[in-house]
Image (cartoon, rainbow over all chains, first blue to last red; front, side, top):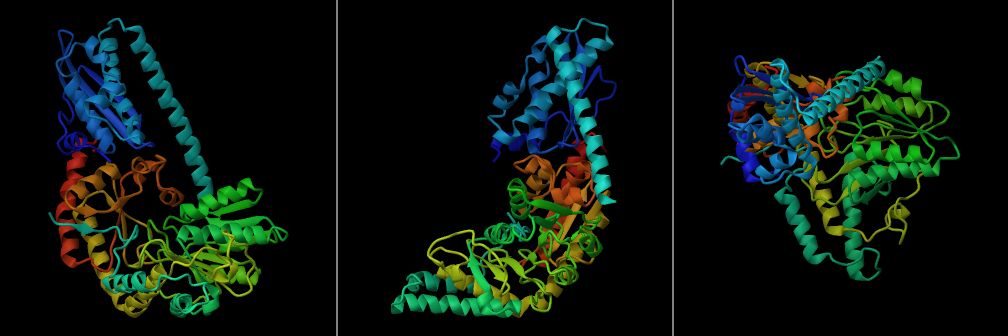
Length: 159
Length: 384
């Protein structure tokens, strides 16, 4: 199902763990679907100097988390924002079709971390990043609402 | 590398004693069992002998057993066949919310055809309440279908009680015994069961063969129409070698059942206790006692099941998971959801299922390597 490169990243993920005093934090995914990623960045001279992640998720989620830190490290913020899901999948040498959505998790978390850094520093936020941020926020809301409804329904069923 | 297979609930290796029988019939018993010449009649005799063995194990009459290609086919036959044959009497079918997909998806399909499906809830152990069934059965009910033991958590239902309620209300009762047949004793007469499904590849027999018990006199339409094989209940040229294999597998299970249950319970309990003792924030899913001797289903907080499964796989250990990520539908296990577990709790669930060749050293090996697997994945998780 998974290729050797994916399994290698899964087995020995790069840059994992929590970061002390990050300049930006991005959170993406949700526990209902089974994938959550927290991504931390340190920024110096508009470059990603250090990057770390923490992920709850499957093999694909862990592998995409690991590779995106490799891809983003050392890059300028502008260049890092160009790392989309296709690039993530390609650098892993492909993912099973049912797992492609995991790569969105990684690119979303990176975009969110950069968004967080820029807004904390009162910097101008590029339009497409603004849009992306709004989409991610909206998706979070929808899932939280769905989850609440669903839990209510379950509880009713059990009583 | 060590290889440890702990996914016997998914499928079992064929027992060498069964393989010998299948091989022998593949070589010699090739004829169509419907043919009247001596070759055909020889094949027919093998099938009837097999039918007797299976019937004996269930305490049924041989003419009440038919052979099918899979438990999925048997379950589809019962759900759709009974619905179709009894639609003049009513349109309501009652199932439990933790049935196998082949029962639930058949029910869904029947719902589209105008039948009303009631899904009974289960408690936190996965138990169906006979009281709830009593309340749910109505004049419109034409079938109740409840599995004897659950495939994911191994919870064993009070089948006798459930069937008795149905008998009192004169509603046919079906049980899917795919996971329990050959592991716990079944007496269809005493237990008042009208339909029963069981499979061969779960009990060390070949794949592609299963059985269906149909109590004499029940009303059911066949799923497959054709040459009228299996007393008209299941047309298709009869697959003699695997049926003989199934019968051999049944014979072995009957003989070894009580010893094997004791052996597996001991190993299974060692595994559960070992995990709960060694790994913090780990929990048992399902009932502590009312469960199949070979089933241990545990959940590990803060991490996801597919990742655990693959880490174990890299160490040579084969298990399965109820996590959403590992399923094609990307939905968490409907069984664990029905038991009231939150999606985040389900994601880290792992099923270990033991079997005939499971050895104590293998359980020790799992207990040795599993704590590190869990610890390593937790180091990456944002929730610890």
